Image 1 (spheres, rainbow, N blue to C red):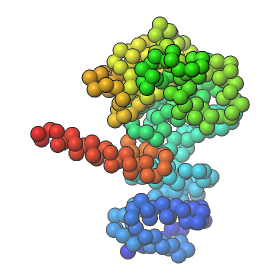
Image 2: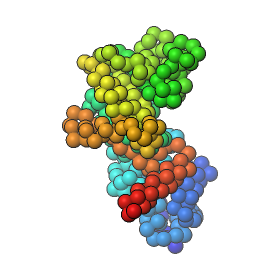
Image 3: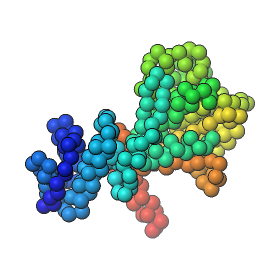
Image 4: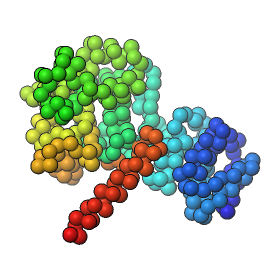
Length: 322
């Protein structure tokens, strides 16, 4: 049994509504937590008790500093501890929000997401590589909207390989937008979540936000734009080179993908895998990497990704030993 006292005026906020934060810690660490006033007891290993104390103290100090608890803030503190037990939580929450049109703002939810934001702010080309649910596309869209709001770009270009249609979209019904909509849906979802429906629709109607399927990018030069290439693991080497050479003056490009989810034929090299190797030591191009600790979807998604990665690592070792 590990015991500690948490002296704070924000005890109920620290514990969360109906002690949901304590319950989340119990479930994650596999312990039992009992709280009587400011006295907290953890039935479990000493190291787990100390970890829980550190997380709760960090969150209490954040609230005492004047921070108003928002949806997901406790999860962010929890995630920061997992990535760096010595992280300064108050410093993390200070001044790293992304300002959006309409007065909204969002904040990175992990140390890797914060680094990703910093990389986009300081580099013209950024690759974001990691599993689903880690905010790669969402943060990219938020940064594009911030740039648009500040006037540093004139349009946002959304691009994605329509692999399932072999990039031959003619047989699909409707105009170009209707043909590629299913492939760009995740980007639209991020757009509508980050700003109002009215603002989003105005951007689309005024072509401030442009749909550009990868197959239709050849021969173009995109200036003063924020370009997002999503699902880039499904680009070929030639397509990635073509995309990167479309970037014009005053533009930024963010290329996102998950190299464990490549749908290309086995004998085809992924453009994202090759680009990661080619540009990893190039100072002007940045690479942000994510893992299961960055997942901001349902908690089970993190566990699912971890199990798949462990299985993939085991299979790799098995092949090496043969």
